[in-house]
Image (cartoon, rainbow, N blue to C red; front, top):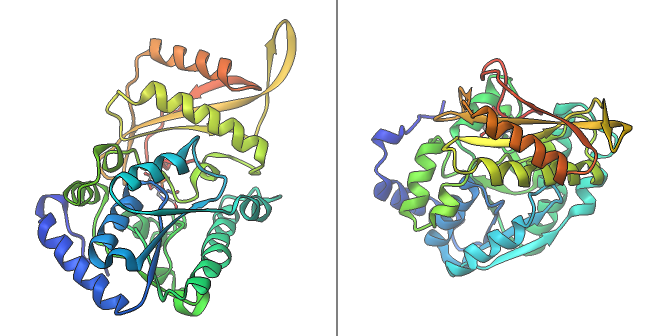
Length: 320
Ligand code: XMP
């Protein structure tokens, strides 16, 4: 059982010192590696790791092809400004091949997890001779995996999986006692710019968590474009998280006087404190119709846009 450190009892200075010490002890004289996705958790772990062991931590950004528009370049430039070097590793082909033909949500997650930890990271860790992987797992990831709601991308020990045995390296998880609010506090205390520690959460399986049905290059492009529109138009609403989801079913629509059997985008925008429960943000109808018009205009093939008004539970925040 992991003991939670609640945001209101978190002493960020003490937490950072303790975790930096833990990272130094666990890595010893060895090299460690971490994967930066640009999300709040991985950005915070990157700062913490560099504070603890400096250049002995190699930070890589895995370009899995499932990221948002311009994400690798943006994240790299933020960290470069903080004096931290980021290597971008292009693994797009491996991920798209691994996802080919898969429609079941859990199988999709499994394929991404396996490709990430075993294939791509397995190789990088082996080549680098690093002994451990530093990772930003948080308590919410563990809770939902243990409860059997969905298997989070980054949870192993609690499922009885020994990373050392399965992947050949050890995993260090310094944020595991925290929830999102606590992580943001630590990220801020470590000097991350607010553009990074205040970013909306983004899931490990990235845009694949927002595609119902098969993940193909074309469908990724559709959801990526829709995500850009949703993020641009909902970023100033104070919501916890907002996203576009691509549905599998097509619906009849019309475009230029012609029947168009087109795609459907579902918009979700959540109010939440810690992602354990969430409710839909009360967005003005006017904004919703503008959002729909922009998605239809900017994303080829979309003829229907809906807004999700269910709560979590029974919904989850992501769709897959
Ligand atoms: P769900 O969809 O489980 O998401 O309600 C809870 C929060 O965790 C973020 N998140 C993930 N969600 N798989 C997920 O389904 C992951 O690997 C993952 N990593 C992070 C999600 O975006 C939401 O904020």
